[in-house]
Length: 292
Picture 1 (cartoon, rainbow, N blue to C red):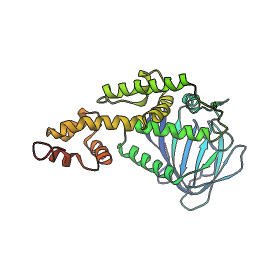
Picture 2 (picture 1 turned 180 degrees about the vertical axis):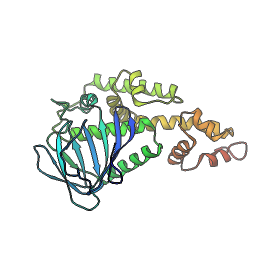
Picture 3 (picture 1 turned 180 degrees about the horizontal axis):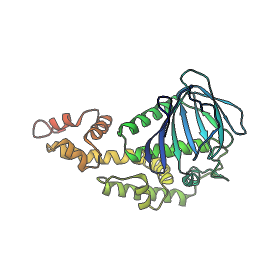
Picture 4 (picture 1 turned 90 degrees about the vertical axis):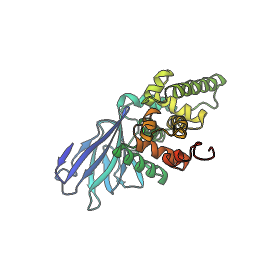
């Protein structure tokens, strides 16, 4: 929503399952810069510029790229400029209804879904997390990311922030029946991925097929499969693409046939996994030279 031309904008970027992503920019000159505000839904924010944020009932916090800010639903806050560029950040917002689900999947006991982060929470942002956020945000803006990858990453982000805000009661060890159930869940999910890889799957679609929540499935699958759901699905798609490429198939047609949204997205994933472009792989197909 535009606040004032050339001075401020809260830009919605993408819907990611039950999450939303956006970018916020507010110039110091904007007349409402320091006014009281509030967040409509639980939100995790990655600051770009230093500003001082005071959430209702908490001490002031210097919000800068070294930390991640977490805002509970409808909790008021005020803002104070600390530099000439105002407030610039990227944000991820969750539907309030999924917060309990995320907490349960993370093994966190939470009394109030409206306050998943506790009092004025902010945490140190590891450099790897900051780099991941910038990559995810850029990919969402450009439309160069699978929905499953984005949803898994954002779900894990909220899980990480919620777990970091309070003690996490866990059992001392998993029961054998629970471990077996998790293995079976993983195998069931693998079956869905293997038989429906050419469809535009979402994490929610896969989870509904195995009767689990998306966040529970994502965590269990990663542990038992050794890869995220998105990584596993991508490799199935790429393996299916190899046979087509070796037969000299069209690149764009191959990309769409195996479930990728575009030629460019397919090329990006192919290079990341195999370290070579699809066109170079196709050029080395068996009818031209020794089989790869």
